[in-house]
Length: 409
Ligand code: KDG
Ligand code: MG
Image (cartoon, rainbow, N blue to C red; front, side):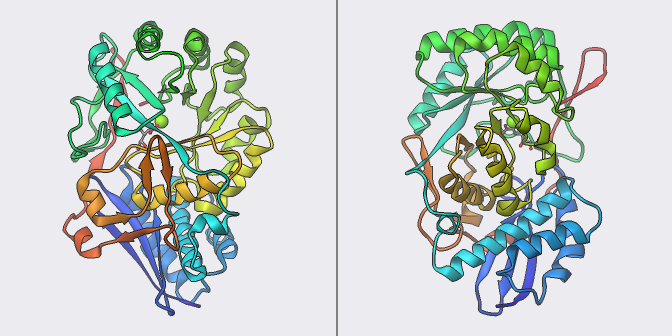
């Protein structure tokens, strides 16, 4: 088999997505997700200008060789743009291989290790009644594990808090990227957040009881000592995980957090290679790996990363917000089903327009996702529908403290 074409499709139903479609001389096609929120056109150019010409004529079955060739032959390694582009190629090739084998991808990865994939959804509220409503709505939608984000008195706009309740899947519960020429400015105050959050979890636990798995995302905003304090304060509320408690560019910083708290820690949605996790995994400084298949070099690299984590009893918690396309999401689900050290999968749901462009076969019921039994990853792209939604500039917000200093968002 030979690759005869590779097309980069940028479409914006509800939000921007970058998809690579690889076509072979046997008529089999494969899809890969290369969406990088707010930097979509850079990945599209990296693929179209520098990767597609290298793919034509290659044997699509040689996935490991293609991965190593794209990673090493560029000379310039790693980084979100490069690794998202490599991921798009890698997932498209796995899609082709599984279609050629007539099997769903998870079968090629070793077969199912479980019946379904436990997923968590995003509940949020500006105050406790709104938060409780949002949790109840998520339970009604079938979620059995819930991420809890809340407004903080004194801060105008906080990551993860929906401004209004979602209706009929027509809008996301929370979509941070905004369609505009410039990124929006938000505000932040870590002391106010640290004062407020434990009381919120106390209220949620007393309303919903001890069983419900609860998660929280700190979104990189704390210093290590602040993160240590929050982890300790949240211990009575038995979190499933505290995510991105600090930006982990300094992996050693997690030693300090770990010394002070037994709250489980999840890190890595902005990471893109196994090297970003070396100290975190080897010293067991985290409990869950948050990388996305889309941002960490695809199935090939994620499998190696998660196998490394497995040796240290660290589990998966694959990133699955709306900026992972249905293609990236489906790829994650096949991996989730196959690996032994599965932890949980984030599942935020796409809007109606996205579901028109990407026809998916994965299912969600009673808290569990399943990738389905179609050969390949099980997602089709309707190119006519995609063409109806051209790219629109959209950016994630950024933060400033009260005195005007830029802070991590
Ligand atoms: O593009 C940024 C989002 O992917 C990120 O803000 C979502 O933190 C996130 C999460 O945990 O889903
Ligand atoms: Mg996060």
